[in-house]
Image (cartoon, rainbow, N blue to C red; front, side, top):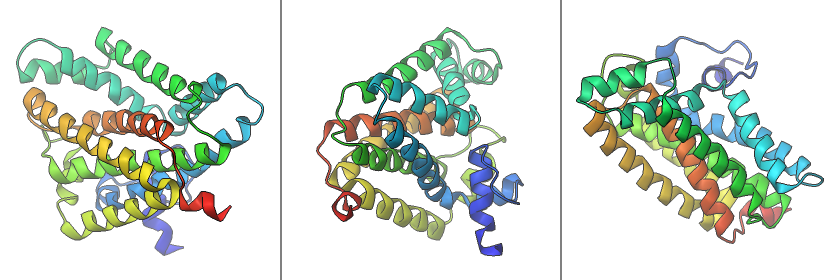
Length: 258
């Protein structure tokens, strides 16, 4: 079980799942951040299986609502809260210090509320459009989107610098390791290709572009990235990936097997 400890620590950090006796020390989790795509795959399998099951008898509109709600609950609302904080900081007027204060303010502002409304509306609409041709494609797409979203956080930690000494600092320091970054990339590519094929690679390309934009905007607005930027990137790229995956025909390996 000792070999599972890094995965348990990452999973317990990212979700409310009872992941055994995972190590919760932030520096230990940061050292194992390269396993975020593995945690994403586990989350994706759980949520995807649920979506597959309820899609048989529920309207797509309700499927989107349940999936969005389940993801928020499973991740302890942390990433959703980060999206609201990121939007508040981004839209605040003033210099970097004022934007940082707005992002760190525990109260959700109008920009944060708008971002959350748009996010949940997008999550519901992407399932309502009927772009997923089967329950199995829906299942596979949720896995791919979750893995891509978790990889983007790893990538931002690797490529970015912390705006200040805080929550993101251990992650940006740990993920400057080239071998860890290569491991995260290899894990992500294998899962995305297996689950979503070429459509998954297209979703990845769009998400990487969004990650680059968020890194640039965060640098201009805050002087670097923060924990809220990482969490917001998870939500934004998950939705973007699902939009791409619902728009393109997918023949993933997992579908050819079954």
